[in-house]
Image 1 (cartoon, rainbow, N blue to C red):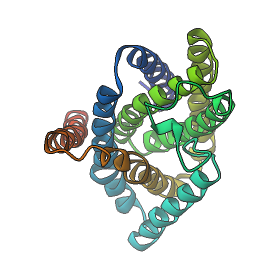
Image 2 (tube, rainbow, N blue to C red):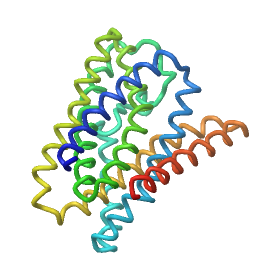
Image 3 (tube, rainbow, N blue to C red):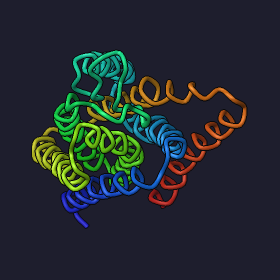
Length: 255
């Protein structure tokens, strides 16, 4: 299968899968089980960033420049989050990450969720294309990590849309429409980057920065709300499972 075919297939399948899974899980699971998904997603993000993406970026780019790129990326994503463009937060209490958000939102965050998620998905598409242009193995691992963290995030988004007054069908339809931004970003990146290979290591560094930031700044703090020993052991095991799953996929695809 060609690189472009991989990019199109993964972008479409990943978006549809994450939104459909989020809708199903949001209806069937309680907040505690959603936290299980978040723990696994943290491991998948960190595993993809440190085991796959950063080694490729350092291999094909200047080490000092790549380290600076990752640092710059983390700062950029911090600023974007503050500007309500990255993770849907609009005040000190971030409803997008709280599966136990109030049952009524008075319509304040529904539109924000859709705008922020569309931007987020567009960036994910760019990162997926950049990874596949480097290698099919890197593309698959990157896509799996993105899907892994998209599912718990989409669960939160879906719940916020319901709290904002959207019906279940409208919330699902708008989330699916937003997911198409992944394909748009991927196609634009493919045609723009295919002749600009020198930019690929930089985008891989930014991809790693985004995954590290989301895992460490957005997802891990929520786990600290559960401090009992049983929850801590469960979180460590699930994070380790997420890392291990990336290592297994990396080994299988690399064969």
